[in-house]
Image: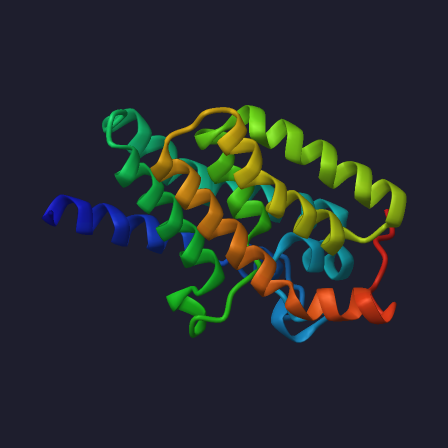
Length: 196
């Protein structure tokens, strides 16, 4: 029980590392929370601080989801409940980071890292959905919401166990919830389109 507690705390603290904030500060840029959409994630960094920092932020945010889940998967491969809880903890760290007063990102890149460990084939299917929608509509938010909604379905169809499916459902629901303002803007036709 104590081991599980420390694993989950460690996963949360790794997930809470604010990659975008750190990178923009290190490069002399302004606080990412005070520019663009105010979000700390890769899309806002890309739009306000440039392509290179946006891509590095994406990779960093994905890694902080991937590494804790991969570590636990290798150390406790049969304990899918612990693996799913670790995934949830690192994801919540990104969305509600203690280092930033619990005001974090929307979790898409961190979820990507998590799902690459939990179900790589599901990620492939979700990436097709994301890329197709962003290419067609130029709305990153629509692609993110749709891919998040598809992930638990893909995981279920590919035969993963109940704990992994439940973890995926939890993560996907929070991603969609954290995009509620984007959903409102999409409905009103006010959402910003992505410019490559």
